[in-house]
Image 1 (cartoon, rainbow, N blue to C red):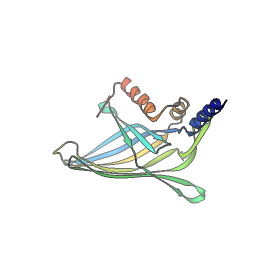
Image 2: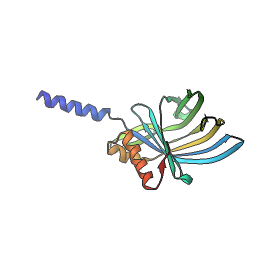
Image 3: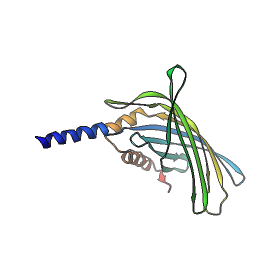
Image 4: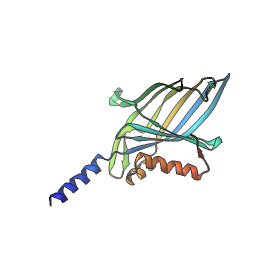
Length: 194
């Protein structure tokens, strides 16, 4: 009897502790500046947020080249700000400066949205913005010996309730949800850029 009771508590705790994923359709309108050029481009894709650890995974699709990238983004600071009429805003902020092989890399993100109650699975809701927008600026060096480039982008993220609910009802992890989406892109003839 003790064993059954302990097993029941473990199962109940694992169901309660299971974090939901939030999935957003993403569009970035960007401009790359460097080597004497200013090149506009658009990146579409999916942003997956793991509510248990604050990690984001972004899948960016470059349609013209049939290429996609996957990047895990950590160390975001989440700030709640109370606005007029009891409106609560969520700000996601991340600034990274690092050196890789002697090359400096700088990235700055700031996105914001008004909190809503989002349905994340059949019986669960989560308070977070249904839409996020903001700016990102980063400096990159495409290859050793090349000139630095500045990339400026305006990012818009729209909550994808259908994907979020389906993936959470299936109890997918972040890795499984991202794998499902990248497999879909591969089926459309895209290839992954490393």
